[in-house]
Length: 343
Ligand code: FAD
Image 1 (cartoon, protein in one colour):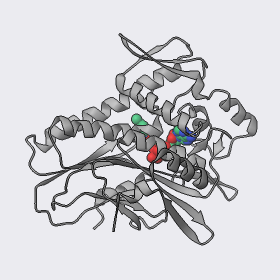
Image 2 (spheres, helix red, strand yellow):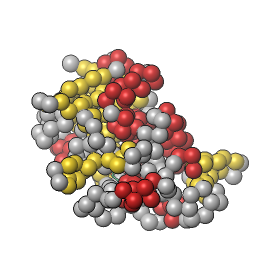
Image 3 (tube, rainbow, N blue to C red):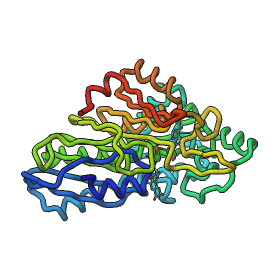
Image 4 (cartoon, rainbow, N blue to C red):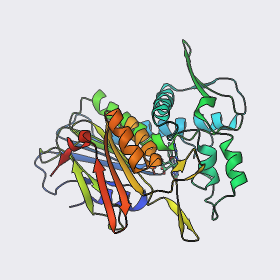
């Protein structure tokens, strides 16, 4: 049976992951679900826990609320929105968690040669995929050029001293967009909560980022399915056992608009300032943290199948890529990904 939460997730939030589980449980299992970051979260725990479900849900909601208050561009008063609104080039104080996200973004940005770029916000907004209203028409080249002039990771500095962490920009109109990393960050927060509570059997997800450890209510390893990029919501492409790792998928086939028969995806190539336009339709990454997996999947999506596979092999990443062919879809994976596959 495909879990109903996963169905909702797939319908609502442009995801390619679903959770496979069965009806009959042999150990107690707690399921907690809710909304965050414009999508849904899910926490499944098997075995006895000391805390009651309601209290645990309150703690989960508080953690995710804090993440939204820190990094949401959909909240005008978040720390990130205030950084984007200021035109000052003075360093601005930021919370530790946000600094961790920026650090990871800088690393993956460098390793993908700028394909993953959190300063791409002005272009995301221009193409109608940010918090503002969606555009109905593709923008003109001069508008794209103007937005591009306000991007570039080299214009963003992360500073640290004994008072805390600071973020500094040297372009007044710079707009940092952490949407691509937020779900992974949220999952890592939930994983840390599980660790603090001594919970060792869980599966947690926020949108398309998932992490699991231990066994489910049947005493079997949790399994996560990668969905086929088709309209059939429960078509399974591959199944993995995460073994304590995290997985995240980025896709171009659910969040897009169409104009004159052309599809415009929400994944922007920072080099062209335009939505990606190639045959790679989804990139799935398994990594030690969900933040890392969530950053890499978008960078690889931008690169396209050949470059993404080459880079994944060079970096030793566990990656699964689905590309469109003339008569359907084809998949390639790195040997590291194969180690997580289950039949
Ligand atoms: P991913 O592939 O993981 O990321 C794609 C997104 O990353 C794009 O939509 C764009 O924002 C950005 N991006 C595009 N190209 C690049 C690139 N080259 N490099 C880096 N980034 C790029 N949505 C709502 O509708 N309402 C909300 O209230 C809301 N709140 C949110 C709060 C938070 C804290 C976060 C993180 C997101 C929120 N969202 C909200 C956004 C929404 O859920 C996004 O769709 C989601 O975060 C993007 O994830 P994805 O898995 O769909 O796509």
